Length: 128
Image 1 (cartoon, rainbow, N blue to C red):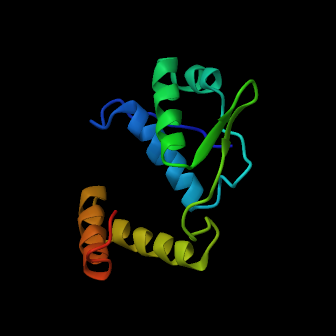
Image 2: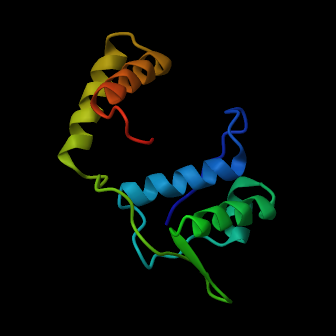
């Protein structure tokens, strides 16, 4: 099950953070078709956010065809995204690279800038 973490200082709307974290879990294979998302009540208890915010995020995910609400049962994953399982060799390589970047004194923003530049180079023209 996905556990949402809300960063109130990120400048990103809370419902967008839930949408993004759900999509990330779908891309990493942490959520699969048929899995149940936490109920709005469970998310509210874990994050202290407004239940309407959770419902707004779930509606957005439903609008994108990623989840479906089943009356009286909850919200379920409808389809997966991507092909980057959390245990892939590429993730291990990226983890090692990030560790080397941190050891060499780069901070998070430096790493993000480098990574974004490389992504832009190799995935030019693709939608993020």
